[in-house]
Image (cartoon, rainbow, N blue to C red; front, side, top):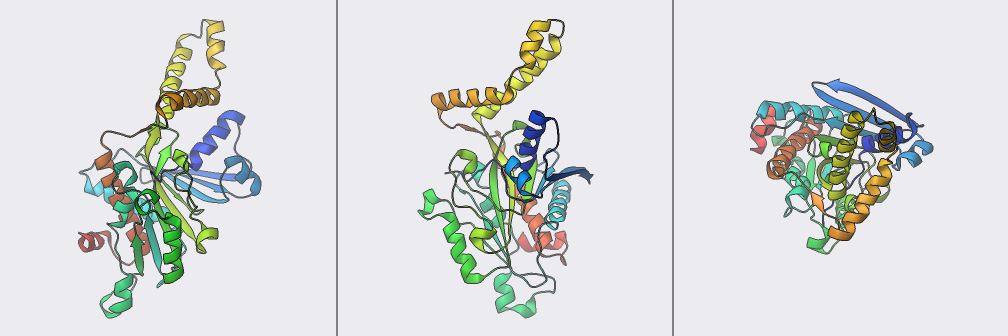
Length: 324
């Protein structure tokens, strides 16, 4: 079962803005360009903002990245540095503290394999710091990682596995990587989300599992995600929205037809499409045809972003040599 969720804070904010024509109360939004990457930071500061957004209080960062070139190593390195820079805004880890990284998802299903692939490319050092500390340079923090699989593979709730490891090794911060289901087709494999409120695996496909957050784990939980799929209803809805926008542009002189098109409730339309498709095809998910290379490249970018953030004294070139 996919551990894919839909909870992009940017999307929740956009929906509220369209419906109400104003910014969400209790929410502070900052949008800026950073080395060609559009970064939107949404901070939910009070209970009213939390209730409206349907998300816990905290910080949600969305990086809108350019189209990935699988063969452009320099671009990938720049994006990794960008990820590290944004991670530094939500991670509070001191020199010598232990970070535990968990890659959620099913490594047998490509769109859901982001987490395990990231884990396979991390600079793992906890065992070295423990057993051969004299061989490790200063500024390298203890990092351990796990790709625990999914309930359908193990028969064990993933969060229970992680809870057990956390209780045993007592890390100072937990970083969780997961694939996401997006409510906008254009955001698939073009955004990276970082948040400090944890993660709810499976919620994007109607299969909510036990949450990963400070309450359940007892330590700060940082979540990193990339949308890798949309459901069929979203794809159909986006297509209809584009068609309606085109018709509206072309029918301004026909006042009645123009008025009818403008009054179409897009949320009701989406729910109707979703209901019809669920009856005909179940909960169908759609992913790009090049998803193999996209997930592979995204996993490298995110893994090196984590490596840079957790080992600030080492250059990316040295990390690449160490990993490869």
